[in-house]
Amino acid sequence: MKQSPVRWMWMMLLAFTAAAWAAGPGAEGEAGHADTEFVIGLLSLVLLMVAAKIGGEIFERVRQPAVLGELVVGMALSGLGLAGLAFVAEIRDSPGLHIAAEIGVILLLFEVGLESHLGELLEVGWSALLVAMLGVVMPVGLGYGVSAYFLAEEPWYVHLFVGSTLAATSVGITARVLKDLKKLDTKESRIILGAAVVDDVLGLIILAVVSGIVTSIARGAGDGSVGGGVVLLIILKAVAFLVGAIFIGRFLHINAVRAGTRFRVPGIPLVIALSFCFSMAAAAGLVGLAPIVGAFAAGLVLEPSDYEVYQQRGEMPIEDLIRPLSAVLTPIFFVMMGLRVDLAAFTEGGVLAFAAVVTVAAIIGKQICSLGVLEKGVNRLVVGVGMIPRGEVGLIFTGIGAKLMVDGHPVFSSDTVSAMVVMVMVTTLVTPPVLKALLSKEG
Image (tube, rainbow, N blue to C red; front, side):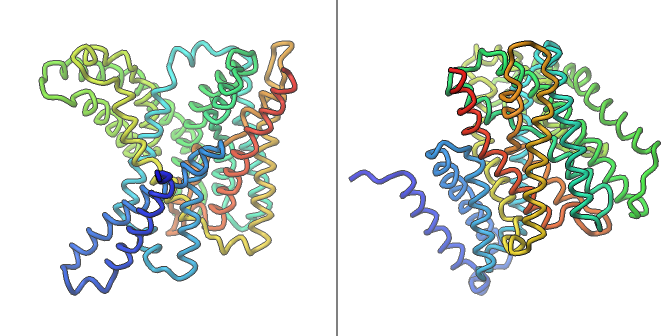
């Protein structure tokens, strides 16, 4: 009898968990400490890869985004940590796994940039532009207000980061629903997808500015104050970086592609693309911006058609070369995000109340964006609902908030991370059924 692939992966997961347990502190007498750490690191990597795919598969089978399954797996591991399993803390604090997760999220934003084209950005209609702008401004304002009320003791930049996290949109979930219902050619769909292109760019600019402000505060006195001149400088730096990435980055990339054609060894297209992506991410980090801003800019600059000369030589399309790497490393980021969730925090009424209100603010903020629709005969409710899911983008913003430090304290505490994860999960889960119901009524 043929076994289910999920059952087979469960068996692998249990086997590697047992191996990780056996290779714990007691094994150090049989091998050097460094070797033991390396072995445990390898087993932890295997554990996260297999667990992520099991979670993703389960959620995909119930027609939910795989990213939610990966997140839930991480939360389940966090629960095991609360139950007293020591190796969970080692996984959560592993520098190697954190590096793998960071590379995974950089590759994800690189792919998002690859799927967005500068031509599409310049061709979006006024409705899509207004929807995107309102869909960024309103959630930021609402999120700031909710955070200021519930987290009154936190400095202002925490509230700003909460609002910025609400601004993000993961339109890939909406696009899948529209594709399943064969509604991609409707006016509502064109506005949603057009707004998503602008939304990505605006969201990344906001992230660049806000993370730059927090970094500036952390490098300063740490009193939470920052002058208007510093904020203006950060904004100009973020805009200048993106503009420079488009023009200078394009020039450098094209010349690298041309130089690569002189090589005969296989794999040159992948090396050029990854080198460009990682270099842009590093450049963003060096100027005080989030590295994912550079990765997104790299993807935006890079056009798949640049690599056609390599395809004529038998190489695969650049998207197909990047996808396997992303499929392995990106889920690790979401599992690690789930591990950050403090399940014990949900026993506190304040955290649950904050999570509930910030989720409502996230939904209302995207409904207001539908007021930007100018065309007649367009269902504004469909547009507003289509912009609701935060998905992987919201998790990326949350992860950065949990990583940025001011005076030795993260911008997002474990309670805030937990509340934001709930917001991401709810907005991602409610969108497909509501959108399907609305579109079904239209026939």
